[in-house]
Length: 351
Image (cartoon, rainbow, N blue to C red; front, side, top):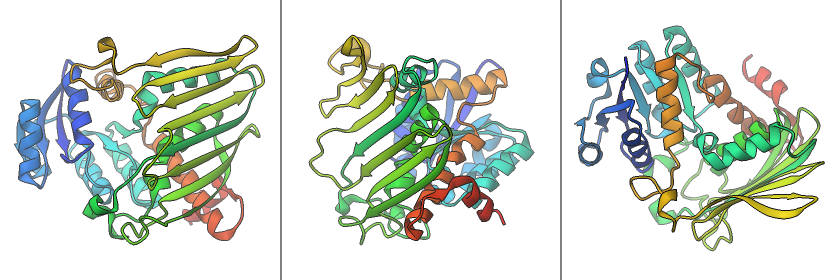
């Protein structure tokens, strides 16, 4: 096999970036776009130049893998169906509504012997990879502290219906969106051993009842380093999109996404504070063939490469569940008013 035939399952907002990623990867053949909404399926299929369908199970016999971009409440069911049909799975984060559901996905894909990858896309972007390399190759020295802040605005009038019930979406911003950045802090600084999270729901509490729209999470990592993550879905006048900082004994690093679309990595050491990487959307060579930032290509290429070469994905199921475990433990810690030990919390959940 020199190409992987893929069915895109779910044709909502995030699927466009996935379609672009598959179209940019020569070893991927997007065979189907599938959605229960026929119009959405047709729209994405037309853009991709492939077939469309409204029934996932009807197309599994014609593909090697599925790329699941549906709402979180059907991730487990669809992953298990695909695995039992012998298909490899890429599943959008967050991988499931609960830790128990996530475990069923891992067990099903392990039993079927198929590859299971969770779409923690930031790990596959060059800027986040560069920051990670600086953390683990000794550039920063002993890391003792980390900080991350993300802000965005989710207009209450345009919230997707599937987010508006606790049954379909039993979570808030921290689990759904913040999982990316908790994953980054854990990837860069080491396993999160203890955590606590607190928040509020001043803006979206009546619209998204499953959790808070604004949260703060504090963490201790395995080497004793500490970190904090502050985020919100409810900031209409943000000052910066993403700010991720790692502080070490030799040097410190900052990754930023600015509101004008530019991105930088800064390094601060004895020579001063300098830009060591930059992305500028005004520069044509920084864009992908679709006129957007090269944000999904790395992830899709890794998925296809792992299938063709029989490799384990960097964000396989057991890795993908770890941010969920840390956030769930932190949330419970906030409710109890204690710094929660993650391993103890996970063990208790399995009883």
